[in-house]
Every structure is written in C-alpha cells, then in structure tokens.
Amino acid sequence: MTEPSSAAIAIVDYRMGNLRSVEKGFATAGVQGVVITDDPSVVAAARGIVLPGVGAFRDAAANLAASGMRELLIERAAAGVPLLGICLGMQLLATVGLEDGEWDGLGLVPGTCEKLPGGVKVPHIGWNTVDYPRPSALFEDIAEGSAFYFVHSYHVVPADTSAVIGRTVHGVPFAAAVQAANVFGVQFHPEKSSDTGLRLLRNFATVVGEAS
Image (cartoon, rainbow, N blue to C red; front, side):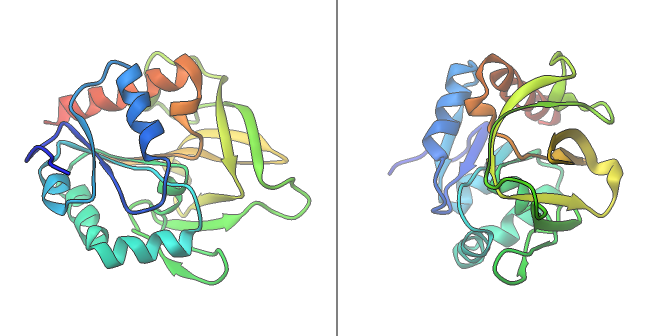
C-alpha cells in the first residue's frame, strides 16, 4: 500500500480492528488528510495520531511492542503531537492493563485499566450520557450530558483524577474520557456516536491544527 510521506492525522494499524470505521468517521466529519498506516515513518511525520482498537489489552500491547509502535507513540506524545486513543486505544494509554494478567501500557495517562466491577453488566453496550468534570478542547461545543456509544468491559482508572475530562455511569461512575496535556482518550466510539461523535472528531482535528 502506497502512502504519503506525511499526513495530517495517522490512524495506527496495529492489527486490532476498527480502523475503517474510524477513518470513515473522520471523512464524514469533513476532516481531510487522514490515513490508516502501519508504517512508523508515516506515524512519525504525522501532525496528529489516533490509536483505535477493539479486543484484548494483552494482544494489543504485544502488537504495539512487536511493531515498534510502542516506543514511537511514547516519543511522539512526549514531543507534543496530539494523540487520541479510542476504546481499547484509550485503555492502552494507562500504565498497566489488568486483563488476564498484568500487561504494560503506554503510561501516557498514568493509571490502571481494570474490569468493570462485579455486579455491573458486562460488556457495557449502549448509549450513555457524559458529563465534564473539567473543560477540554475535545468537547468544545458539545453539550454536557450528550450521549455517546460504548462497547467495553474494562475501563481506565487514572492515578490522577484531574486527568478525567468525561465521566459516565454504568452501574458505577467511571472515566469516559481522559486528557494528559496533548494526549486524549475516549472509552466510547465517537465514530458510532452520530453527529455528536463527529463533532468530537472535528474537535480533535482542530487541536491537531492548532498544535502544528
């Protein structure tokens, strides 16, 4: 597959799915210059990075390490490149994942990725409203209490609660969105969350443009 040497936004292909729907979401939102890539040189040159994903934390962490993307993502985030993790991609931002063992995450949003507690129906599938504990450019012009679409069994527990920029409730309250400087994560699927989700993808593109 031939790809441009640089992209406005690179969607990282690390064999964990959900790539095309995220790409289509950006296209529907009117965001141009978005490419799916497994080429480290394309990711390194991108002005923004999206880490999507569906599946197990263990497999995702192994794939990132084997592909060389793990260290690259850490490096680019440290350089100030805006990065958005979606669903499993948000979970990978944590320091460690506790799914069928203990696995190293990227550590970009310090904390743990844990299973939703006992007594809570899993997987959590459906629409939930999200409130904003603190302002973030990711939710610019998106009304507090807007609904987004979730599909997951695990959630991120940040070490610093100030990293939480979106909170929802499914049996228990948990972080629906996080931010640590230029690193963002959403547990829901914006590409499946109608116009509200598309607005969030445009907001991320705006953050990328302002950081470039």
